[in-house]
Image 1 (tube, one colour):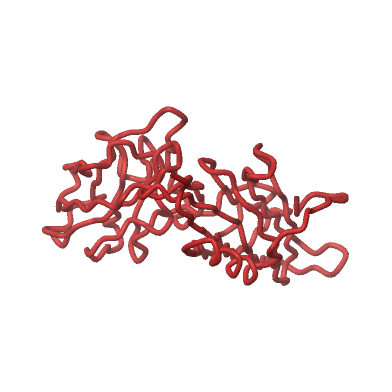
Image 2: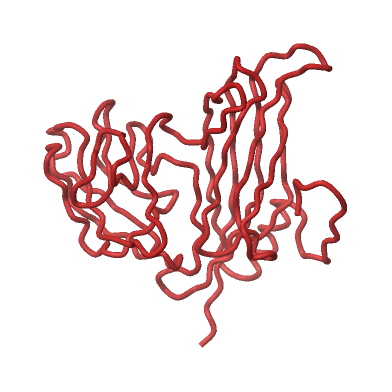
Amino acid sequence: MAGQDGYNWIADRAFEDLTSLKKHARLQGRVQEVRFFHTVATGGAGASIEIEEKTGTTVTRLTTGNEGQVYIRAHTDNAAYEDKTITLSWLDEAGVVHDPVTTTLDDNAVTEVAVSGATDFYRPRPFYPYTNAVIQAGHTLSIGDDNHANDGSGNDLWGVIEEGNYNSIHSRYYVPLEDSNGKTIYSYLAKMRGKYAGNQKGDEDRQYATLTVTCTPNATGYQTTLPYRVYAGETFVWEEPFRLKAATDTIFTVADDAGDGGNFEFEYIIVESTRIAPG
């Protein structure tokens, strides 16, 4: 597997990079890309942080066997939410993607609105939810159980939709099994790009950041961690696609090697291909 030391023999395959993967996938069925881009401040002194779009917000991930009804709530009162709607798509624990459902928002921060039809929520889809409300600074929407804290503390908070984004805040990707029509989804981690803006102190003691991918390759079936060193002032590009195992999390973290830290610019592309399930 790419990212590990030593030799690795790879059987002949029909793709080698993002472009050839997409050409190959189109022969099998519909293709779509999941793209994530964000710049995050590293923790400093080796501290590892998960790459996310709202630093400091803690999301409580539902654990195995804990699917649940999802609720929407405004962080603070906002009259602009009156009569506005939100559309939510999610996956259950098995990795089955459910059809998006639409719910009308409430304009106060007390009422938690149950999302009708979303009773077995486990993870949000990366490119959902969508709302026609203008989310202003300080008026973040939160998703969670029927008594979740909406102040970013993470207590029963399953996801956040922040101002200017309209998406789930984290980079973490839950690998789907199939869509709501029974079509198998094949997900490939296809490309990553990183750039670390730490201090450049010369060739011998240049600072670097370590990007770590925690995932489960379909070929092995067990979770592994893949570390990649990104030196200050250089752009790291990885493009050796491999398939991810369904119903597993793909997590991206970054740490720097020194106490003075720096910004880390990160992008990933995941390719999803669907085929009609047999029978």
